[in-house]
Image (tube, rainbow, N blue to C red):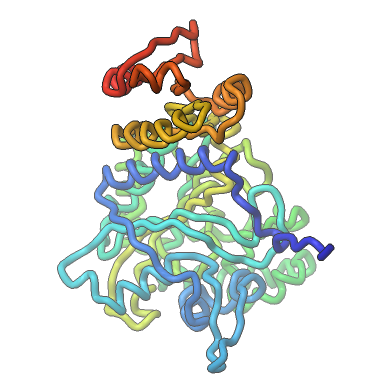
Amino acid sequence: MSAKIQAIRGMEDLLPDQSPLWQRLEDHARRVFEQYGYRNMRTPIVEPTALFVRGLGEVTDIVEKEMYVFEDRNGESLALRPEATAGIVRSAIEHNFLYNGPMRVWTVGPIFRYERPQKGRYRQFNQFDVEALGFEGPDVDAEQIVMLARLWKSLGIARVELQVNSIGDASDRKAHREKLIAYFEKHATVLDEDARRRLHSNPLRILDSKNPAMQSMIEGAPRILDQLGDAAAEHFAALKVLLDEAGVAYRVNSRLVRGLDYYNRTVFEWVSPDIGAQSTIAGGGRYDALFEQLGGKPTPACGFGMGVERLLLALQAAGGESSFEPDVFLVHAGEAAGIEAWKASEKLRDAGLCVILGAGGSFKSQMKKADASGARYAVILGEDEVSAAKLTVKSLRGAGEQKMLALREAIEHIR
């Protein structure tokens, strides 16, 4: 017998019993996004490697360590997408779909990062990505944060915290970068290998280090909030006013920088205490320079990513469960009844009902399967029902009443 082939480590199967909760999440997200005017789009999972190197920054964990990169048969370097924003911006530039004005879009699909698999963090995971392209005011930043607050409420997730920060404009970050380098150089003996490597190339990322030995030193580092230019400071102040007006609680986290180079001004994260060390369930911010970096015209934008697997952990912690529950399990016995059951199942589906057609066997065994299926009703077809041109409808929940009805009456009864 041949050896079994197993899935690649860190790339998980979504099994049928797990999918109802996933579908519930997607249904709620789609409904909330559409309430705010966001339209669905899809981009390829494979893109030119240069797209992510140019868009995300060479000195980032994703580009340095985590991308799945390969050469195709023509020798072109390609990458499995490690995030979705760069692909959406590439698509907007390529197809010029902002020609008639700004646009709100969202997508969902697999993302790939080579890292150590752990709870809520996989090498292939699924992510919602939501982008507002062509909007420059703080109102769209606030809109996306408030939209997520509405989604948490819709899903019944209460234990979440919103953290916000501003990392200013390019000139603010340049001045802050110089101060950070000077500060970290004074504490060079405390820096780990990653921090020393990034000291002169991307010192802002040192603030995002999770190394416990560096935390007290990082706490004393200069804060970019203390040196924002007037425009960035006004933008951040207006954002906080809008969140206050919407009744959305938040904490200003001056160390929040996010992990990608394209961000400016607003950055935010929603975190959950219920999902382990990788506690962020949604995060994003403003990226006003990315369009130019990828060859497009100057275009302001703001967006966020939301990891499905992590969000499902938070949903389960909040008591959210879903299961597949058909409306009808159709039980039948005998050749004539089998043919009539086949026809009846299609009529019931024509009426919008979800129907599982039994595979035959004794009535007793089929009724056990009907009960185990989670269906609300068993529809039974035997010799008596075929002779009378009717169906027996038995409730599988509650008192278990049953009635013999004509097809149309059966449909109305089940409804």
